[in-house]
Image 1 (tube, rainbow, N blue to C red):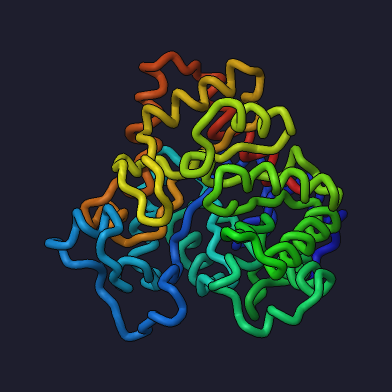
Image 2 (cartoon, helix red, strand yellow):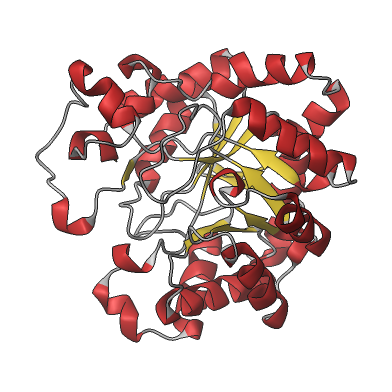
Length: 346
């Protein structure tokens, strides 16, 4: 059954259907529960069971590539991990496994039913190198129609509907295919009233390129999230310029406490540095533009394999933020108010 925009307006959409946004509660805005981020040429559907314990440190620091670390298709394991969020006081998870990353909408619905968590699913396509070759010849309107259908009717051959557009993927250099997908995503944002979330390229100037592109295409900046700020922006000038542009800033790598980052030549910040950066943005008057998460997409990050797990923000980050002077009103805005506003269809 296809839903109309009027039927969706004022509600949030989970994998189990529309709900009152007041039910969302504390929300993680960028996670993966069931995924495969292994480069397509290296995928092996026969590998199961997770990483070996003796590989823990190397895998944690991305020194060793192992498909058992980059592929998680086990619904039972996803259920156990999601239950930890609920037990720790969390309530909702935005799950952004989209085209190219092997989405499992029915698996997410199964996890939601088993745990009581609200799971909001994304839609669209990841970066160029992960996309289906058939996408290369598609038009902006084709991508837009696909994403509108994924929100209003069902995604990936199922009746499970997406509740947010993205994480739309970009790499460096930014490709024409990725620009067409993003232009289609902006149309989907406009037509459905959903928010849009974007995985920027790993280049410090790309988020601003996104702002210019979004303005040109008529995106709603106050409902557009720039992901992965913590691995992309390292100076206040760029950070404040983005905030002043009105986009939502997402620090979504909480729990990654190691300096070493395999994908580009940066020193990854720890959670304390993330909180200090967010404090500077709040002090500039942009509290309503901050959301946070873990972006777990390696099995070594699951608590059952010794990682920080999906409850890390609830268990560690929020108490630490309070020690560093964050007020309850600020934390409520970051964890509850801002996500609720962004996940409510307009």
